[in-house]
Amino acid sequence: MSQPFEWQSDYAMGDPEIDAQHRMLFDLANRILTIMDPHQGFGELKAAIQALLDYIQVHFEAEEERMREWGYPELEHHQALHAAIRRDISRLIQESKDLTSLKKDLNFLMTQWVLVHIRKEDCKIGEFCRSQSQNP
Image (cartoon, rainbow, N blue to C red; front, side, top):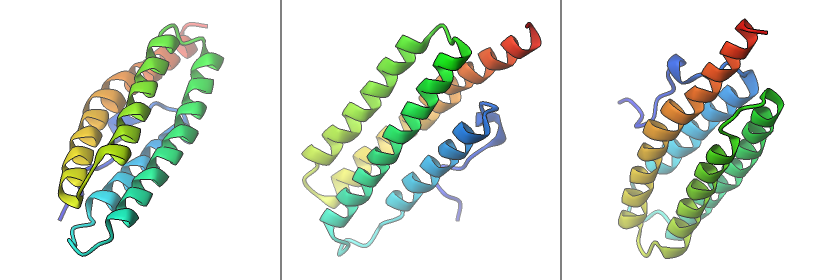
């Protein structure tokens, strides 16, 4: 059975640290989404999502630092996207009332994040970085 979120090489930005963090985020999201047992502690799942949020914070800080180093022109826009993701995950942790809705909402949020943020926005950063290295 394939995992809901599978890393693909075309998601890579070209920065080994950031790409490794993206792969770890995929792994963390998949671990959370595979908790199917209805007897699984709701609190345990919320704690796992909090761990994901904590790791996201570390990742966003590293990614934003790279963007500053590279002179990425859309840094402020990207920071706003990061803030929205953090806000959405925090809201999810605070407002979810049961395991089923929590998993459904998390699945939607992670799908949007993977499909839109990593594949579109983060890939733009990688393209920018590659274009800068080709045109010194």
